Picture 1 (tube, rainbow, N blue to C red):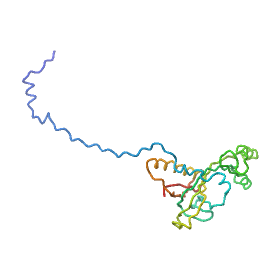
Picture 2: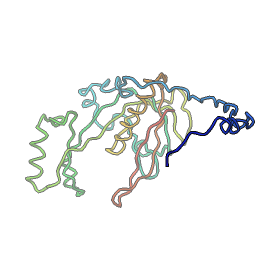
Picture 3: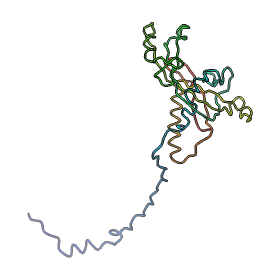
Picture 4: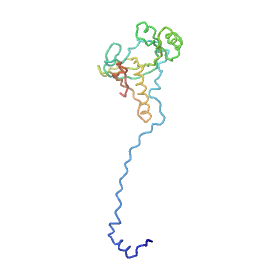
Length: 230
């Protein structure tokens, strides 16, 4: 059966309802909330890149270990040689460098005599012997796990520490902050994060806080340094 269009009167009856049913007010416009734009990162470099090797390798080699007090991370906190500093210290970085330790990776007293240092991972400091040749010699001597491990040194002014607070100008001393592989990783992390912040306009901080934290890996407990803006 064919459908037919409704007649005009029916259409008019359907259109006699109040206008409020067919003409509703437009919904209120909700204002858009825009977040403030963050500064773009752009091109950046690691923080403290200009401090790397300010103290030249030949000068570091000439100084040797023990010329300046050595700051290390222990399970109990930061140590300056045998003195306890507490959990935190504040330093002004003057220079930093990488240091490779060529080790038999054995804890016996005899093995410790064979530990050597290199600053370029190519030649042994003090002898000029090839690092690879030395590792090969250690392995031939029975030290199958002999290898080169990456460490670091920071040469800095120690200006404050937890157990004493701020030092007087005449008490400020230059120290060698020794970075284990784990502490070096944290230093590199600080460099990257701070480099991004500085690329966004943050001023370069003069002082840095060093914090000692307890860590555990494969059942071994050790102290690790972490770095932040003072």
